[in-house]
Image 1 (cartoon, one colour):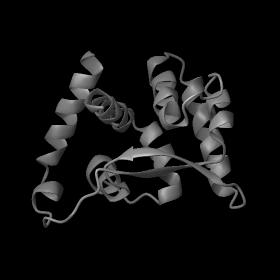
Image 2 (image 1 turned 90 degrees about the horizontal axis):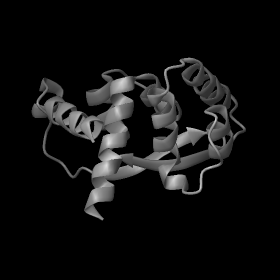
Image 3 (image 1 turned 180 degrees about the vertical axis):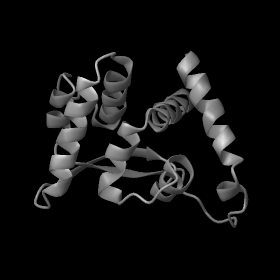
Image 4 (image 1 turned 30 degrees about the vertical axis):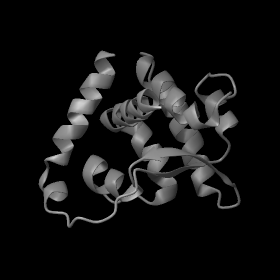
Length: 144
């Protein structure tokens, strides 16, 4: 619960940054799709998790497993799996929900350009971005 509240506060603080305040008003999609290179079941296996029962929650479960465990081996294994799948152009991507847009995540949260197929890896590698992702998903779950 404390993590969710902290992520919400951090997310609201990000909205006050100059890149967000100066943006022109436009229709912003609340949700988009996050491509996860490769297979979610294989990614869950790399994080030492069972195959996902609910694909829409799978990436959040992987984020929790990576950042709640003290061993950085999990992050290295999951990151290596994502990088390998991203580099293989013949692999199909699974898609999971992405709160807000990919543009918001690259410009405001990560503050660097990230190709769409590398966004899952970039979010996972950044602890604050990961926790914001999980927190925003939790807020959506509370609203349904």
